[in-house]
Length: 166
Image 1: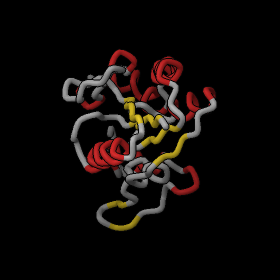
Image 2: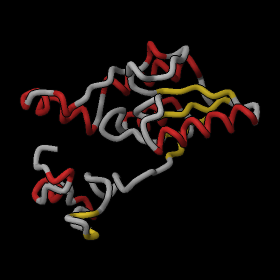
Image 3: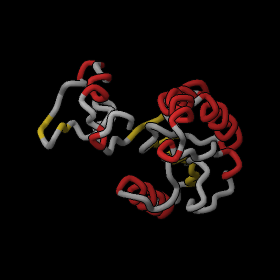
Image 4: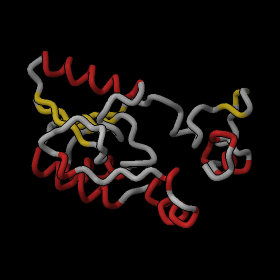
């Protein structure tokens, strides 16, 4: 069996990455072949597939005009789609397990998996599918304003880091 683990980062950055690395170790102990797909980042652990990884872009370091140009790529990244298709054709995993892909790799991962006919599962580490600020909190209180696709409310209420622009 060959499983590809997908995550925005391939270095120990937080809890989701710890899960990816522990899952990698567990699968390898079970004699499963594991490959990774991520974004290119200086802190990543090296893999034989780094050349397929799309570049890491930190939107917080971009000037305002750059943030505006980059914003659509945080929702859907066509470059990631093309890179992942090439990766999948080369590696040919039997299963894809995605973790945190939002804002970087994006749902382009699932489109590429579907196109290649490879089953994909995804572990959700937060509420990002329901809340753009991912915590479902506003000013420390439970917030459900963005449920049912009303995501712009997150901007109106400056929910993410108490900042209108982020």
